[in-house]
Length: 434
Image (tube, rainbow, N blue to C red; front, side, top):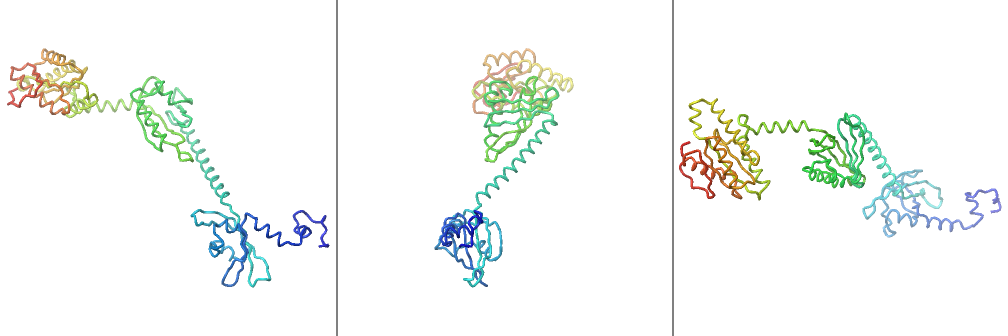
């Protein structure tokens, strides 16, 4: 011991420990037994590898007990059997199915007391570190995606004609980015849920559907489109189409709803025009036979508690007029009759053609006296016979037609140019000659 000079040794020199105590074995035992790092000594022979020493941390780290000593994972034994200096990362599945990651170092050491080679193994638990690294990589990837999404969003905002929007549910904030010829700005609205109810951005007829769609996209990941009337573009209410998509955050919850709003007013008007033209008889301007009953059913379903009256109008002697004066003159008579019917019934009724010389009308929220007055007024303008029936709850339009047809033929039997109103359906009788 005298050969060492204290002052010549640095603090990390192991010789200083020899100067402090001669019992190095006790010092090492205390150090190794209290380490949180797993330490093991293994002996390698030609065909076998056996553990000479394992500290308590070794058992704790890999999740086995001393009674299960042979259950050392194969991945550890493979590191030992390499018999050389080695640094490696391994994964161990424990009995509870959990996974732990370790940084393993092995090194051969010389020991004359054993017949084979001795390998020192040190394993440090890096599970938390690895998980943190994986989370950092995931966050970095998400950040890159967000930056790319932001870049794409800026490009869209600068190049796409229309309005981009993004709604943040946690802050209840809506951000609009306008790219219109007369408006290129960004508008942020806080407390958007309350704002949209008090300010007429969305038409009152569509506010419920708009709110339901937005709420649905906030509750779960969704994408879709919605057509609605809005004043978002300025200049009054116009038809718009909003394309939207939920954006989900790292926690699996919807972080925002973003999309694009375009003005489709001209498109919707053109579509409605085409639909109208497909539904309307071009000569009379009334609903076609194939459409009018559907419109009547819709009217009844929209107001099931309202009072309705069904009217069937049949032109008197129209066949004779056609035969005597020709179809061109007959069409003129049909057009004049349709104009007269529209002038009397259009305000509160669905009106349409049924046959060549038959017309139907379903009037809503009128009294019995009023619907009879309408019929009498029509008789002063058009030679016809009219059957009227009150709407019977739970019956369809075809039933009303049959009932009104019976009344109409009763009016013809009465001499034509008359109105027949029967509350109780008549028994079917032989139809009078028109």
